[in-house]
Image (cartoon, rainbow, N blue to C red; front, side, top):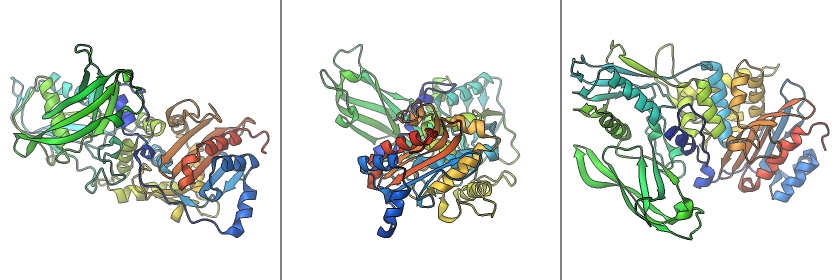
Length: 519
């Protein structure tokens, strides 16, 4: 589990950088099947191609050689220093994010921002009453989290709006996507990384249950919910336990999210979260992140908006519903996201799947015709950009055909695949592009931060993206060799032995950096 406290706003934003990035490996996603074993006649040549130090590490870790792809090549061009099954198409998990983020930097530009607009369906009276609907139009902002949303609403109040005598109408038509099933990937619908894309995605539809020993009532546990949602109650049946190690504290608790049978408005039922079981005092304060699955696509938005507006002293005499922005209506107010560089930093450093999916779909919008974004168009746009940047002098690209297979742009997919050679050539293209500084600075640093902080074989000398699913372990990035040469390095392991592959991939990074001699 990966936390980010790097953001110009803290609190829930820092939490969301974790909860949308929890590794699917830990969630028990279905294993990825490795490609068919290579023919016995090719085994000897494959073994001979391995550097002895890496072959020894693979044997010690019990990693099957035919499950591995590795590629190392100079960033400025030249011969490949290492090539092991470089053209085999494999699942690379979150390493797929380098295609989404790199293409976005090139196509949208580092300063690109998303805008969320507000329109008024009537005039605001001197008493602060809007007699008519209030319209909200989203463009896919991946970073519209709780603090930013509260600031946006506070601006409405500061501009004189107090009572809304009409509905709040949500226009989320910028994204045209199939209905999302949060349980489809791994059967864990309440995991925050399983949130689907939405043109008006508020707070990633996330909830955080916060546990801590009660300072007022000795021997009890205080459980709070963030954010406070309208029509949502927490039923706390936990008990504080002394002398129990913290460990995997959530395994000892039982949690349920269910409607409570009452209704606060037509077609809107109240819900409750019930949690029961022992909570160790040794845990002190802990958070349990969840994805709100609710009644409908806009149920979370309705509960969040209604509760937040009431907390600010506002009143809503209507409902929150989906609809369309009226033709010709000028925006009354707008909110701009952080720049793309900031969003990409969080996507790559902390492997934020939800933000990656939002960004991928943004690339599928047609700015010229103002047409809605679709997954098919996003796949086409990113594929074309990658192919155009990775062609050799003969016009052929390593990313053609099975070299690159896109799905949702995050790597949290059983369909997305790439060859090590495709990944490597794309990283080399990014290194030699004008957006190189922004891209490389978004990658975790081996042994230092983000998802690469435990890779110590080349600590401080490799910027890289990691990938991990059940049956998948992967790394890809830019390494600074001891000789002064820089390299693209890619390592991928699929199949059962991927669970044991981290030491091998760490050794690959070390081998790449130690280029003054190559045993």
